[in-house]
Image (cartoon, rainbow, N blue to C red; front, side, top):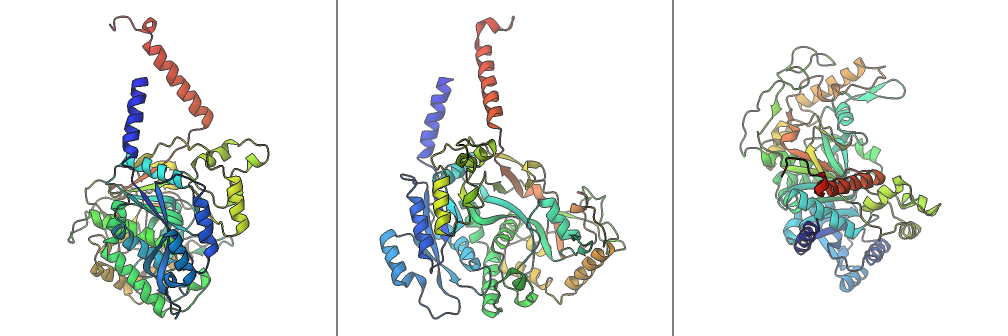
Length: 526
């Protein structure tokens, strides 16, 4: 055992010299130097850490503003001279809607892998997020060791949304709950407290897994693939044009009400997530269009069910299948804090952490919502940054299987616009967009049928069954169902209760010592 331990330590030492470096881009507000100073002070709490390089991301210019470029401001120029920690991207500052960093975020993902090729991971966080830098480095090192340096990995706090395709730039359905709940929202809508029913999302692809904006990471292979994706660049360029022509809105509800043809991209995280999963599917697909593989529906009996607003006999159900192994890993991070005041709460009462607090204290990678000076002081006071990390073991399984929790895995149904399946070109994006405009006959018909289903189910309070979450009520030729497990593997970090883990390790030690004892060698085994 001692020899094995020495060999393992030697292997780890050798690996540490080749550990992939991490670039963390902080979406910085040029007019808020306090948060930048807060980030730099936080970084100094980890002396000697070299796995993660932190850079503040600035837009190249302001939206419709005669102000000079932020990087040329005297105070920012002085910061850059002192710290050399700014990165300038093509996106603009001060956008006219609630998604103020959508252009910067997309520009970062479109340029980081090419501009900074020496990194193995690229991460992005908000400027009010404080990241446990050495723990982030070790966790991503763990993922690289488990999945390999060539793996395409999308890493973060996983959530689910529907995303309205065809440059409609709107999330619909989901936001909380798992993939099944989001699929129900997309396909059937849901019940309101007053007994009425909201309609489904007739234009939405999904359920789309996305990583919430507190912090999200991509491995170099994924970041490079997304950056080279012409359809993602078309998505970004179209969003810029919409920003040029859009009407200013400062609340999500008002932004969501804008007409389809001028709707602006304001839900940053879900939009990026949609492009990640679309890129993953098209990257694995043939480079030219080919017929969909018709199969019997694995859950619904071989065809689109009639009724529910559609009525009549529908086209045979088919599932898009490439026959290839999964290409992209969706990794749910081990833990995070939503605000600084929930960090290690019990330690401040009796000095001893509960198991619940111990769980998060050993696994959290970041704390979000640190906007004020007093929030920052609370984070520094409450978080014992030197606490040992949890002994993490990445568990991966086909995404249709249950995983570490209901939010990670159990993904049984997924639809995408058929035009997006075969390639990542602007032509494919344009073909998809034409079928999703407000006046397109297919779009009008889908909206009508979604309303009819909502009306037919008015008064229902019982949650839709799991079967419904993967059974459309009517066919829609714009969409194709995608075989989830052929494109995605879901991964997470399961937790073993500390006492249970100690008992298991002790039992293994006893069993090992017993089996090695001559007195317990079975007769006839020599």
